[in-house]
Length: 441
Image (cartoon, rainbow, N blue to C red; front, side, top):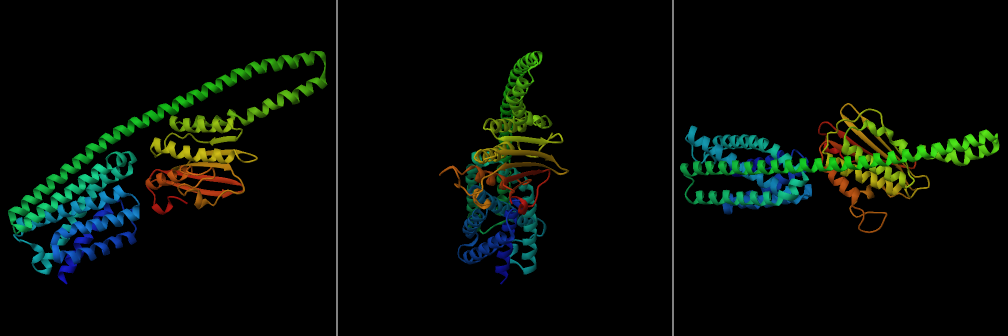
């Protein structure tokens, strides 16, 4: 019975480390599944093959985490790193008992000594997990890092576990002498520090690359915005020329006293120009309140594109938007997907329209995009399914990609509604992380 509880505490330590590394993203159901799976496999295998049975337990944990998160690389790295940390915590606790209490093999002593040793191991492992969780959060939050270095880091973690357990197996054959335990503790700690240093170096490289990428996006959006301004200037020059011609024509009718021709000219020539002014770039004047050039660029380019397609596009920004707590690349990608889908749907309506509003709140910035939609618009739950599209096969990837991006962001929510013949999407970027239950609705 004592062996059962010893293994249970060891499994609980590893599972808790996984939970901490993943920033509590696993549900209690997933955590319980990990503990039950690890305990069942660990207790059965420990009797036959000893500590090496933890490698089989590791495979069980990897399978469970991957199933719940649906991310293979993170599913491999999190349990593997947690096992490495728990092994180091176990050896540190073992070294403390040897050096300060002169007790060898504490798990083979009395129940009190065994459980106090396991408690110390749990505390050390938890502290190490919290220390490593910060790096792991940066690692898992950046898509570029996962794509470029995720597989390498997973392989490196796996090799580390194998090295650790080869040393443990050698130590077991030698009888786990005090010298062997101390040597393993130093070796494991050194290897772990080396792993952390490699991780920090990779993160620094990735952050520099991300910064370069962000600057490139800002430059592209600024260029796009400048081109739009040039087009507006050309339109104003054209209007100025037309305005002079209009005045000359009207002055001639007035000189001749031809009121009927003047009235006809007014309704046929001047009124259409007035309507065009109301429905074109003059409705984008509120963009001057958007102080982020990359955000201003994506908004202006998409809304001008909508106006070129004869869509009534309007933007409202009452207060200056100077900061949004979201990576500019991800923000432009998300907003680009939303606006592209709004344009594609609105252009098929009898009265096409798009309304965009940026609202500054106390703890967040809300971006609302409303577009006219057809009566046969699909159910909301279908539009986020991968591959679903009203435009044909193999095209419905935009909104499913949007959903996946939103799921990775801790401080962004996406709400979708249909109301009074309009399709509404609300992206809210908070200044602080929010509960996962509020992510997508």
